[in-house]
Length: 257
Image 1 (cartoon, rainbow, N blue to C red):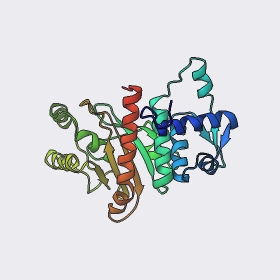
Image 2 (spheres, rainbow, N blue to C red; image 1 turned 90 degrees about the vertical axis):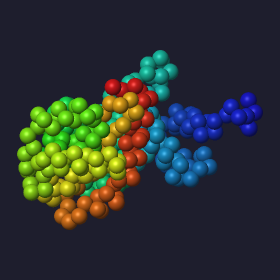
Image 3 (cartoon, rainbow, N blue to C red; image 1 turned 90 degrees about the horizontal axis):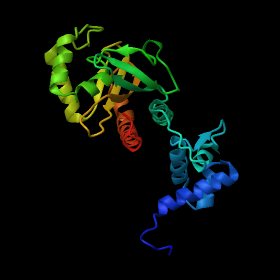
Image 4 (cartoon, rainbow, N blue to C red; image 1 turned 135 degrees about the horizontal axis):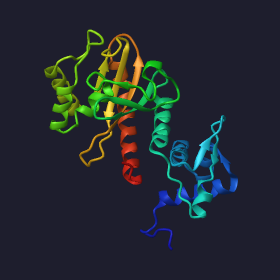
């Protein structure tokens, strides 16, 4: 095939070249791949990080990238299926590492009654809000990000059945206020939690909207800070939105429920 053929996808070709080099050398770095492929280090990082998120490479303590056994398994007709939570943990670890060093990133799941912490980034942990624990949906960023996109009947049922306990003076405890907040979430595309569970705790969340009308998950960044929540929004909104988009694309590609 001619090199200038319109049937040639150059980015995919570079990805294949990178895989071939990895199979030969087993361990590479961002710098070595940039030199080999004649690309910027930023592009080299994106290639390698994409392979890492898909399970083809792992990083060692020196930030080198090491080939896993996924390629050999594929060659033997075995296609490893990564668990949804394992995939999301990689996204959240990367998000926290690059953007949220003084907080924690979370995946929350709506169980029909409250929010369950399913995955958290590895950089930090709030003991009272750790994986497996639950928080009320009406006063958490994760919960409001999901409630805002529930069908009206499901939302009305939730409100009817849920006593809205006041954890702090900032906690939403009325249907009128909750509905007003959820309308704001729908309009701006993200939810906040500003001291409603614990006064210094701030949260920012975006929903994982797959386009099929169902809403089950949201991701968030939380930080213990005094003062306005503005700095958390400024630092984390765009990275959160980008990560949510990437996770949704993963959900679609691998047909996760």
